[in-house]
Amino acid sequence: MFWTVALIFGFILLLSLLREIKRLDFIWNRFPIFMQFVPTWSFFAPLPNMFDYHLLYREISNNGKVQEWKEVYSLEDQRPIYCLIWNPEKRFSKAFLDLAMDLIRFSEKVQDNKQVCTSLPYLQILNYLDSLCRKQSNFCQKLSKIQFLILTNSRIYDYDILFLSEIHPLSNG
Image: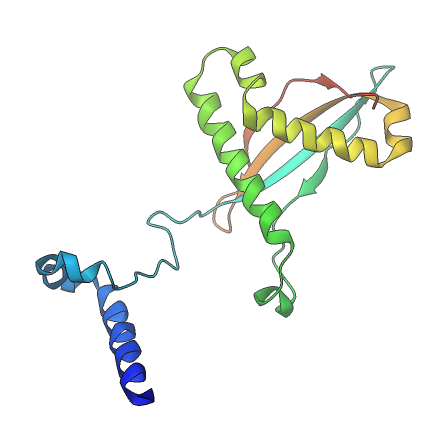
């Protein structure tokens, strides 16, 4: 019984490995019903992301003094080895990447800047930065406005500004 189950799972594993070879697509197209039971692997997306995204913000005080840009999030080049098993930052990086890409796509399609400022990705990033402000109590007392920036880069290309927000007041809460 054990060997029968092992043989079946081994056969499915072999089929799923062979299915990833694009030259054999003509075989899989002949048996579309059976191939629904063979899993496909997608280690990489059809168009993998080739850039790193960085979220920066700057604070503007009540008297109009503009602070330096500070980086909130960037991908680390050197991650600890335990990140292969346990990586709590993965959810944040995925959420930020999705928000950044949605915001950039939306801002390219829409001509009116007011629509961009009321879009969901824009408001979520702004809300995240505002919550950072509330966590640091001395930060909110000195400052009244905030502005954020999304940068991109890769090992080949230098930094490029993808999006620059409007200046927004911080909440008092």
